[in-house]
Length: 201
View 1: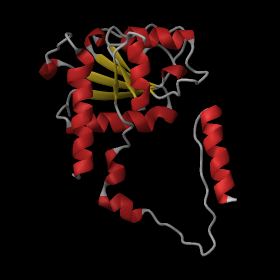
View 2 (view 1 turned 90 degrees about the vertical axis):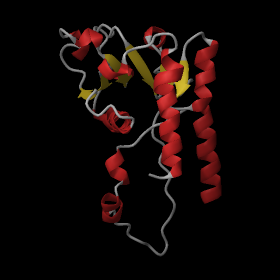
View 3 (view 1 turned 60 degrees about the vertical axis):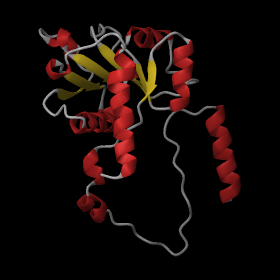
View 4 (view 1 turned 180 degrees about the horizontal axis):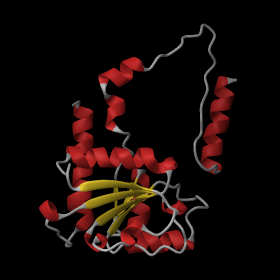
């Protein structure tokens, strides 16, 4: 494991345990976590978070649940004692109730149209907001909510040497540079896009 990964794990561990729960201490050896991903769009992030939980020693205490069809997975008997990590609540059915205990993994830009009044209600009910952007945490804290920076994590098998070796890059002599913007457009992103277009023209 590289020093960069170790630093990231230490940061994530503090975010999960020390900073987020505050006075709400749980018996970690008996606590079960479930990471819910709304659909395939968020599955990569959910898998990455589950792998990090495993590296922190919770191999047998974390489960990955995917899907937004039917009833809410936390509505079944016994699930009320599970601590949920919600990934992709913007794709959660409006008639679903919320879990008793949950963290919100926040992946939206603060100016995103996805941050609606209902989204804010979900954020307010969370044990803490885990935000993918460090600059966002101050915004949530100023709103009186607990928030920590938890970086996006890719599935760890992507980092395996065999996986990296199997990625074939086709070299082209006169290859142009392509930049893909993934997500909602906004003024800040459009400014970055226009600057890149001007430099790459």
